[in-house]
Amino acid sequence: MGKAENILWLGIKELRSFLHDFVLLGFVIYAFSLAIIMQARSNSQELHNASIAFVDEDNSELSRRIAHAFLPPYFQSPQQIVEKDIVSLMNKGKYTFGIDIPPDFEQYVLAGKRPEIQIDVDATAMVQAGLGSGYAQQIITTEVADFLSHSEGVPLSPVNLDVRIAFNPNITTAWFTTVMGIINNVTMLAIILAGAAIVREREHGTMDHLLVMPLTPFEIAMSKVWANGLVITVAVGLSLYVVIRGMLAIPIAGSIPLFMIGVVIYLFFATAIGIFLGTVARSMPQLGLLYMLVYLPMNMLSGSNTPLESMPPWLATVMQASPSTHFVLFAQSILYRGAGIDVVWPQFLAVAVVGGLFFSFAILRFRSVAAQSA
Image (cartoon, rainbow, N blue to C red; front, side, top):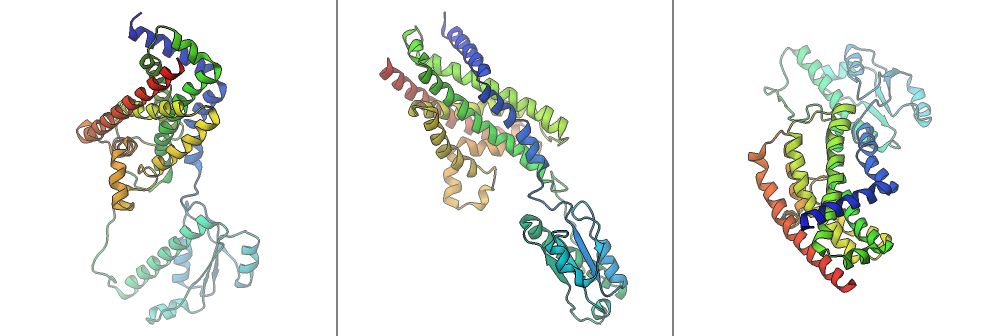
């Protein structure tokens, strides 16, 4: 048999082994389905349906306008209460925000004075409190400014800012977190599956069987790369079409096939890391520890969580040597902004070159370890 045929049949053996490992199989299904759905449904990073109470001691047109300005989906409809009930109701957790407009508020505003509005916030709901207090200040300021401009007949400012948000007009968190979740899971599972394949062969004693056969270490490693890469590629494609587009109805601006080509290129690097760690680790617990040391910094500094521009310049420069950084760049360009190959080919090339170099290094390391075991 030729090398290509050996790699094919060894890869099929690897796929059968994976399908019989129900823990890894379930983990892959969970990572690209339920985990993505939970990220999309969670509103922990944005204000949503916050409960709010309203004390109107002024009972004026301006106070009513302010009350009616708090609208869904950010806030629930404001509930009118009396001032003495604010503390007790917030202590019971019934309201996250309480707004108290004092008497004669409208008169003071028209007189050019600066009256105060009290905003009580339940900070035990930390994310809602932090975001909601800023929203409340902006809403009140906007309504007061609009009220004064209509009362005096002239605008307060000669300039009106017209903000246009591209690619995510409503700044919906789910549009970002779901796609970034898939990108992060590609790296995570490529490392785990490839590394686990090497460690599993050693723990089951089948690595020695492979080494005494007329097979080269390159053929053994390549079979694990294409088999585990195929699993991840299929999972990513199904997740984008079925989960992202179908179940969550999140739009994808660019070409999914073009992104899948980039995924295949990147998988040579990610699976090479798994193979390298598999040659270092002697057991699955050791592989897990090594995985955490490698994956967490690479993921946190790749730009999927925070932009490279917010990092120190020297660190952003160092991360240009990591294919994961370029993977995130072209993934965001394609899936968010609809970029074509004419835009992302530099990132494709960088991933291919650096990934190819590390893949060669991992194969040499695997060959060295295999020679010592033979």
